[in-house]
Length: 240
Image (tube, rainbow, N blue to C red; front, side, top):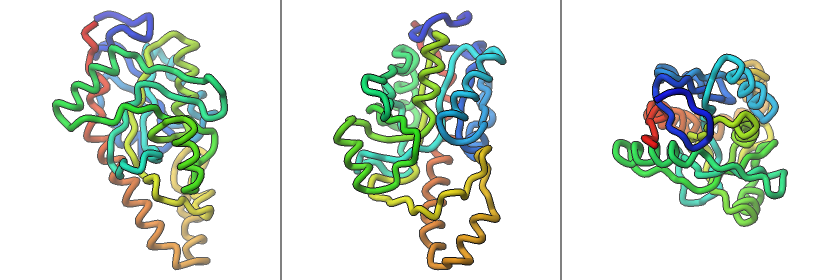
């Protein structure tokens, strides 16, 4: 199929797909997907928007937000794959963006056939981390979203403005039962790479933090491994 003009037409291998990630490790998990170009400028909506616009400027004709996410649905476990039918903006009433329906349906079918059915409930986009159990519960009840990340709502806005197809592929890292401790702040550089110096200082100041850090790191690895295992489905054409 030829280049796409709207958000519900087929996506096929010859069409370049721009994939926005917030972490360098997420970009590595997506390496090797033919026809896709992954770009990480760092975590958060501002960096995600800049990456999405850069990918469009390079010639991308479709955009994907991909990486790990936090669960809001208590049933979700580390490594579960999320392929939401739409994205909701935590900070904007009525801010909802559907993913490209034909592309989404084709990828869901491909995942179901080869990897098991993904979760397709709404994904919440948040400008800041959701770290507490109470915050996760409140957002799940208020929005109906099953998971949350900090980039997808920004990529959705860029895709809508540009009139290009948009999809989200995420894998769960922290669950709805996990509290993300405040001391994790600053352990990532602005470009999404780990800051080993900060991590070492935090552990030296509080060695009791090590088990929790290892547990969260293990869950992030499980999410990234799941992402790597299914990433090639992004190139599934919708056939419409």
